[in-house]
Structure formats: C-alpha cells, structure tokens
Length: 369
Image: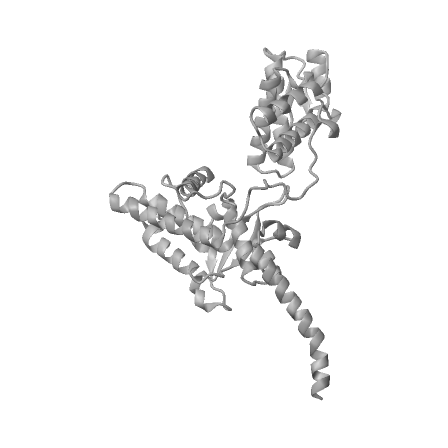
C-alpha cells in the first residue's frame, strides 16, 4: 500500500503489510496531511488536527473504517462533561474529524477500495449536522472576558515594573525576562496586538510617521504576522503610535534590556534565543493578576480589548480604531470594545445636547434678525 503526493491511496499487490491496521492508519494520516498542505493550511493547524484524529482513535479504540455515530456522541460527551473543553474547542475537534472522515470516505482518494480489500469494510462519514455543533454566532468568547479598566491596567503595569526592580535588587536571576515580559504587556496594549503579532515583532518593524514627528522613529509599527484568512499567509498592517509614552518604553528596552539579551533583530527573544512562547507570557500574566486580585475574566487578549475600548472612550474616531485593529468590519471592532456606562451616558448626553442645539439655532437666528 502507498500514498501518492496528492493523498490518493493504492495497493501494491506484491507486498502484503505486516501490520495492516497500523500501517493503513499511518498512511491515511500522511495522505490527509498532503491534502491539507495542498489547501495552504498552516503547519500548526495540520499538526493539531492530526492529534485530534489520534485522540479519537485512542478513545474509541477502533480504527477509522469502523467508526460509528455512537462513538462520536460518547467522545464529545466525555470532552464536555469530564475534560470541560470550551464550546469553540469542541467545534474545532468536530471540524477536524469531520474533514478527516470526508477525506478517507471520498472515493477519489481510494481508501474505500483499500479498506474493502484489506478489512472487508470501508470508511464512512460519521460527523453530520445533527450530531455536531454549528458555528452560528460571530462572537463566541466567554461572557466573563473583558477589557481592563484604566485603573486596573495602570496598576498592572506598575506591578510589572516593581517586579523587575525587586528581582534586580535581590541579585537573583530573572530580572531580564521579567523586564522583557513587562515591555511585551505594554506594547500589546499600546498597539492592540494579538500574541502572535507581538511575539514576531522585530527591531526593524518600526518607522517614522511624518504626520506625528513627536514619536520619532517609533511613529508606526509594521505588523507582519496578523491574523490570516483560511489558506492565506499572515495579514500585514501598519499600526500608528497613539500614546506618547510608547516610544520611551521601546527605547529603554532596546538600550537596557534587548542589548543584554540577544544580538539579533527579534524584539522579544527568549533566554534560549528563540521567540517567547505564549505559555511563558500567560504564566507571568496570571501570576501578576493573582497578586493584584484582578478578575479571572482578564487574559492576554484583554490588552487588545482595552486598546479598542479606551480609544473609543477617549473620543477617537471609530473608523480609525477599526483600521488600527486590522478589522474589515466595524461590527468586529464592536465585539472588542467594552465601553463603560459613563462613556455611554456621556455619548447620549452629547447627542441629546447637539440635537437640542440644532433645533434651537434656527429660532435664535430668526429672533436676532
């Protein structure tokens, strides 16, 4: 048995597999990997889906050509009730497994003929609309997720700075990673960045903004690893600097932190020279939140939520904020913004006052004439 470059299976009649079940599964996964590579999917996405299939095989203790819908129900019942996977994670599993079943049951790829000859049966699709979750809502973030208040984010940044000073004063190792993470937190907020966008920043990604010369050479950051659309490369965008303290943070890090950590161009290297992992940053973020007794609804993405929220509350144009965030639609930006009740009340008051003034102005002009 063999698989060609596009994932089609065929039997080599002169060779009989020693362990046909294990070899067939391995060839199925390799063929499916090839098929996903041809769709331009990310390597991380493909690897995650391969692991999902392997987990389902381990749980069901059955080969893919023997799967049933009852096994599907049992597997996801276990993931929900015992492992407490989120709704989005459940659907990600179902999407991956459904696509795998579509691949092995598609006669164009030949697995039906291979399984018939080797095992006397054939694979079939067992994931349907009626036994899988549907993606019907654009925003599926947990309801407890929110932005920082301005007081909370200032306390968080102050605490992060204090930790760097405390570690350095004690003579213990670790002040440099703590300093790096503190700057990462601040830039995530300064530019409204996702983690992947933040982690891939390089020293050459900053440029001057001729319309905001006060920011010097840090007037704009060129984000090269923005969120990609399916089957497409990362989306690039330029994000303008809006906070006057941001250039100072970057300048200080390059002079007093980055220079002691790495001689490359990656802005935030790890101690081993590669990029900082999300797990590392989350671990420190969570510890600081616990130190300050902050809400568990805050996470790394809250810096991005806070960026949109605080700009809108401070009166920045909604279209400008949308472009800064890299959103195609204003409705997506609205999901991120968590404006306070004071802001909504102030906006309503301003709108009512403007309406009232507009209604009275013709009368006043007529009286004056």
